[in-house]
Length: 207
Image (cartoon, rainbow, N blue to C red):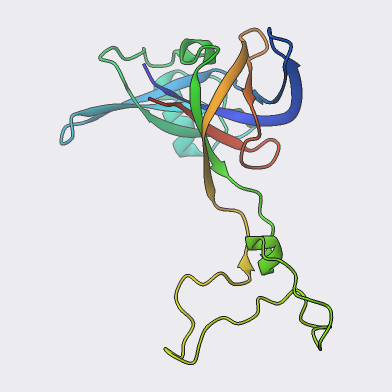
């Protein structure tokens, strides 16, 4: 079976644990994923599953042919590929639910795209402090300041500067599954997750 799952990020809320502690959680929607193809790699000796997730109204000809071959009636939003961790592979066209992959209390990592914030300065992008307001600094309070010395006479690569902020792949580790609702196909994960609401994330087990 697989050790990863594709989930849709929802809103944050809070739950009370058995010890009375209040825990902030992110509730994610995790509809069953359908096996659309079983892929074998002869060179590496690794097998993987191609899974269909989500749902949309229309499909192109290539996707329609792939769905017909796997005998899938609903049109998925997209496809993902996960490695098979065991020797037994599920049947083509079968559904994989969240409760067959994860259990309450599992330690996981979440991977997704962070929110895009456009062009940002060094204070917002890197957490720089503001400069003083006196001694002629009235228009330089949010500037980065000196970016290098006379020698070597250039800006060193990797210098923290203003630029594009967000919209990049981000991974958060050591998260914990608080609860799984198999009837509603939802999962509650402790703490915040990368990305905006309704974005798709990959959660995977940690060793």
